[in-house]
Image 1: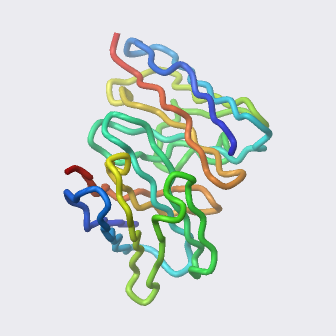
Image 2: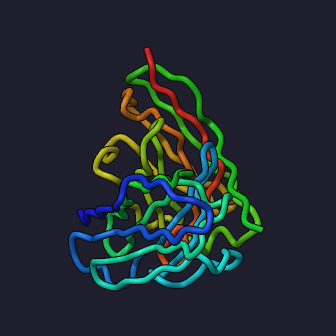
Length: 107
Length: 117
């Protein structure tokens, strides 16, 4: 199985900060990766697909980059509604595998 | 708009069975692959199973292989997950999810399965 190593596991940040989350794949997954946001008690919501394509309706402060084994999710200016847990998901090979998650908390 | 509504969760004893359902609407169900994903309390997301649009191809996570069966009824726009030989490790919120180009794009609200004696 492809392992997705996500870091950090948590971070504290302030409104307006730039935040970067990283996922590293244990083998080449091309750009077969998505990023999801999950708020407490809610279902995940897709933010990014194909590593860098913004899901319709998602604010442009979210961006994704990377190819192969290294991927990043960046929030350019953190907003109060962005405090949540973020997950990456690779779908290059079965089984699909998630990163461990990154909890973004208010500093 | 896409709507996925799970049902069938509850409290069951170890070793028993449960069947989850997911009613889909707002899209042409028969043309999309579907997934089940679960999340144990306080933990991360774990992929469980996938079924192709026509039901011919199925994949399972290692932790459920041989115990869980994914199926679909395209005439009823419904996805199922038959769960047998349940253990306490299967306690989780189970999400039904739709894919597009092999990546999950929409999720249901989830149904809680608690396995406890």
